[in-house]
Structures are given as structure tokens and as C-alpha cells.
Length: 415
Image 1 (cartoon, one colour):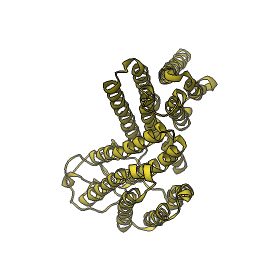
Image 2 (cartoon, helix red, strand yellow):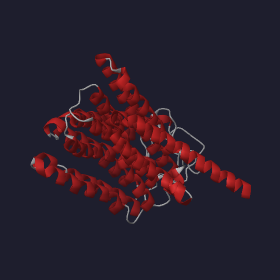
Image 3 (cartoon, rainbow, N blue to C red):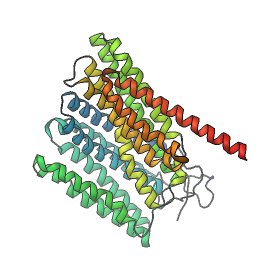
Image 4 (cartoon, helix red, strand yellow):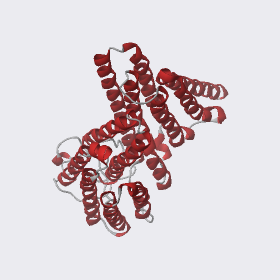
């Protein structure tokens, strides 16, 4: 098994060094796609991975726009179903790439080209999002997903050709599973509209099962610190997109309707929510918790809710802005719920995946779940709902920080 570290230079500048993770020597443009070491020192996200994330957020933004239009028109139920389906396709393709790259990224020319093909696929998918929301036409979404998934199959086949034994069997099972699932997704095109939600549920189960089945006998060499960093970076990008979307909505509403008084509470509350969301996610070093496939699968799969809720916060802020200036055909309570529900979901999922593993005692464990309940109560504050949720989120950070500081002080006194 070859270990290595990847430089940020050209394809020929990357190296796969043997034994010494700190040394870098020139490599060939095409190299065997063998696994990297799980204990590789100083493993960080590559420039290609950062570019990959940035392009994927374009699709996330389009899915958020579709959700805004559906909720603002009073079709929240339908909008949430379509949002869940489309966000899953983006998130699952991103996640599959991220875990594969953590184990096999050799940064040679074929690897880079195939990754760029995956980026092209998500842009095709993004182009079809509006048609999927408005006309339930999933052709472009399916085509974009097909491009991404065939590229992923090519990576696994290449890994199989470069390995042997149990590791090769894992790569082939991944390639075969991805292909079979892609055939199943044809149901979104051929089945009646009222059956597509059931097709989606069946295919989600199938997709989630592929890694479990593929790695039942052999664990791929994903890097815990690298994976934690990749998820954290994508969280930052999604939260950044949320701020950008809300800023554009507030600016447009202020320019067109001169309603600064109505918009300031939404803008201020939204900013507090995003700041608190960032703080809460990054307050603990979660990579130490990822010690087995079971832990990693639960953590990785659970991030669907983290990413989806974080992106939905931005959509909810846009809805709240549209309601404040009279453009949305919903009540102030419904507009408040468009923000408070995803915020509460974010708090609960971050607690379940991250924070609970580092909290000591009932009081510390209760902070985030209790905050989620209080945020939901803010829904009934009408047009002050967003500001109320922002203040609750801020108080949550203050409370958590204070409790941690007191615990550390007590431990220091005892020591």
C-alpha cells in the first residue's frame, strides 16, 4: 500500500513517497491509483477538492432557490419533498467523491480530469433544478447525476485495476453498486409523478446500502482528520451561501420596497443564526470520534441533515424577507417557521453527531436540544421570529461556552 502527500503544484509535481510522508518528489502524469495511508501526517484538503466544493454549492444554491419559490407560493409540503430529493442527489455525489478522494487521491492527470467531469455533471444537474421544481421534469437532474456517477464508477474501476485481493473486491463492488443504482434512478423519468416519491425512498435506501455492502470485508483507507476537514469546509461554504442569499434578498427588498424597518430584524437575526451555527459546529474536534466504519457511516450519513438544514436556513431567510415586503403568499408565522424549523433541525443534528460526544453531565447535554425547542417557540413571534431565533442561538453559544469554561476551571482546581 503506497502512502503519500499531495502538493498544490501541477500534475507532474505530485508525488507518492514511500515511508516518509514529509518528502515530495516529482511523479509521473499517470500513476497507479493505490490507497493512501490512514495515518498520513499533515493530510489536508487539496486545491482540487476546494474547487470541487465551490462548484457543488452552485447546485445547492439552485435547490435553495427552488425551495424559496415553493414555500413563498404556499406549497411548502411539495417544496420540501422536492428539496429533499434534489439535495440528496447533490450531497450524495459530493460525499461519495470526498470519501473516495480521502482514500485514493493521487492527484495525477486522469484523476483530475475525471474529477472535473464530475464538476461538469453537477452543473448540468443545477441547470435542471428549476424544471424539476416547476414541472417535475427530472431529465436534466438525472443526466447530471448520471455524469457524476459514471465518473465515480471510472474512479473505482481504476482503483480495482491498481489493487488486488480484498481491496480490489471492494472497488468492484462499489463500481457495480453505483451502476445498478443509476439504473434504478430511471424510475424518476418513467414512473408517474405520484410514484416518484416512493422511487426516491427506495433508491435512497439502495444508495446508502452500497458502501455498507462494499466494505463489509475490507475498509477503505479514508483519513479521519481529512474527512472531518472536508465536511467542515463544506459546512462553511454552505453557511457562506446562506449569508450571500440572505444578503441579496434583503438588498433587493430594500431597493424595491424601501422597507428597511421590516428587514433589519430579519437581517440581524439571520446573521446571529449563521454566526452561531458556525461556532456550534466547530467548537469540538470531531475527527477523533471517527475510529470505525460504523461510526463514520452514521456520522457521514447524518450530515445530509446538517448540510440540508444549513442550506435551508438561507432559503428560509429569503422567504421571511419576501413575506415582510408582501411578496410571499403566506402568513408571518409560516415565514418564521421557514427559518426556525431548519435552525432547530441543525442544532439537533449537530448535537447528535458532534457535541454529545464531548458534553459532560445532563446540563451540558441539554443545551442544544433545549435551544432547538426554544427556537421552534420563536416561530410564533410573527415578524420577530428570525430575530428571536438569532438571540436564542447566540444565548446557546454563550451558555455552552460558560459551562465548558466552568468545567475546565473545576478540573484545573482539582488538578
